[in-house]
Length: 113
Image 1: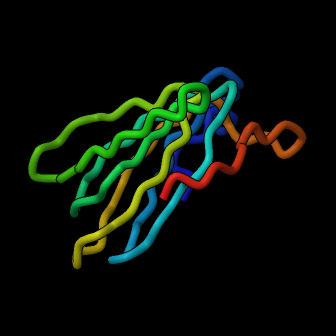
Image 2: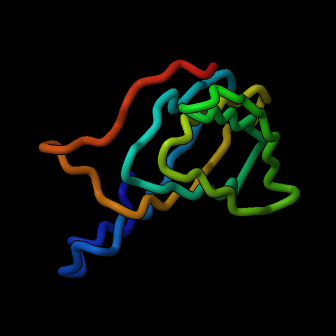
C-alpha cells in the first residue's frame, strides 16, 4: 500500500513511503535497483533480510525483529529479499527514494532466496 507518494505533494524528488505485510513463509523481493535506495523498518514480527552485492556476489543474512527496532538501508546495486520464517504476520514500512516509473522501472530480478 503506497502511503505517501511524493507526487501526492506535487514533488518529484520525494520518493515513496509504503506499507506491506508478509504472512508466515512469504518471500518478497529477489531484485535490485541501479538508481534507487530503499530503507526498511519492521513494525511487527520477525523476518530475515538477505542481501547480495551484484558485483562481488557476496551474500549476507540479517535477522530483523520488531522487538529490536532498527532501520535497514539497502543501497542501489544490492540485491535484496525478505522472508518471513516465523508464524506471526510481519508488517513493514519502507521508503524508496524514487517513485516507480513504468517507463523506467529500475527493478532487476536476481534470485537471492
